[in-house]
Amino acid sequence: MPVRRGRHFLQIPGPTNVPDRVLRAMDMPTIDHRGPEFQELGREVLAGCRTVFQTDGPVVIFPGSGTGAWEAALVNTLSPGDRVLMFETGQFATLWRAMAERLGLAVTFVPGDWRHGVDPAEVERRLTEDAAHAFRAVMVVHNETSTGVVSRVPEIRKAIDRARHPALFFVDTISSLASIDYRHQEWGVDVTVGGSQKGLMLPPGLGFNAISERALAATNTARLPRSYWDWQEMLRPNASGFFPYTPATNLLYGLRESLRMLEEEGLPRVFARHTRHAEATRAAVRGWGLELLAADPAEYSSSLTAVMMPEGHDADAFRKVTLERHDLSLGAGLGKLQGRIFRIGHLGDFNDLMLMGTLAGVELGLRAARVPHQGTGLSGALDVLSRAVHA
Ligand SMILES: *Cc1c(COP(=O)(O)O)cnc(C)c1O
Image 1 (spheres, rainbow, N blue to C red):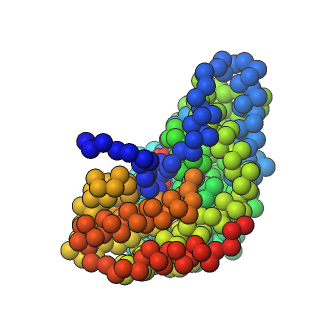
Image 2: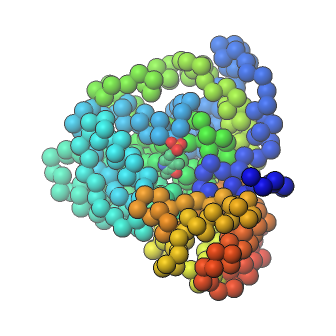
Image 3: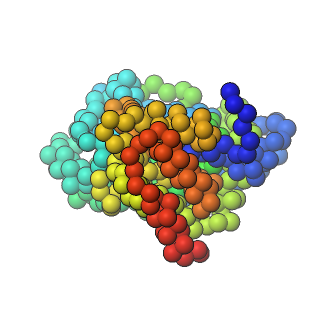
């Protein structure tokens, strides 16, 4: 391995760069998780999570990956054989569906082209057809990290309401939370799934569920087996700031710091920063003459941009060049997109100059890998950044 100097550019769409403030906050002795000092920490992070999910209701924090939080959402609310409606927006939706099937749910998986989000009209049509109300839940990935496409959650909620359907509404916000506007309560979501290692600027290791009253009530009748992921087991000690088993104490120190950082910046400014970086990135892609994977401008992601590789060029060979020459990690094409796209992560602890460094690394890689492109990518991005009003 060559010697590296300066910072590694971790521009995959999660895990993201962990700010020094968070790293320092975690560099602490682990404390007794049954003692008063922990209780204060537990209370602060559990309350702070409500702000980020934009809810007055409970948010539970599991030691685990986002995948664990997916499972928690399902096993607490559903029973074997329950019918659920899911949408093929990309690789993460496909993985969540596979999990639902392995757990014994009967999934209707609406096919998609991996370039569009969930179509609210399709949600309305499927639910209106289901006059017997067989579907127990509708499950949607807010920001499909494999494609850089955002589904319009408020419009999907309205579609469910127009169909007058009682299905629970589950949303995966693992790569949109604290990057793209998201409102658990106002948007009428029943379970929101989150993870620590993307917009929250933490290392991997925490999974979150924001829970509505209806979802909580569903635990009384849900018969899927659950133990580790049981919300009720978690919520009882959470009421006084504690956890039912050993929590990821040092990650919670980090979470306390990241929540404070988000509060200092203010969520509207956090979202505006991500919007600006996404616009600048798209300007660069256009300036290179390359194509975005996301087909509909109303669904562009602010946390990552997926770029199509020109015919005859391998995106993974290109990514290998950017990593070896410039210590820049870009996201790979996942599932059926492997080798055909690369993804630029621009979420989390990120600023204008980090973005320009990233985009310069992409252009150097395009040159080195001899990928045909035009030369106005970087200036296009600079134009967006210099026009932006910095709040
Ligand atoms: C990263 C991600 C996941 C998986 O999270 P893990 O922490 O890797 O288990 C699920 N859904 C989306 C949308 C993601 O971005």
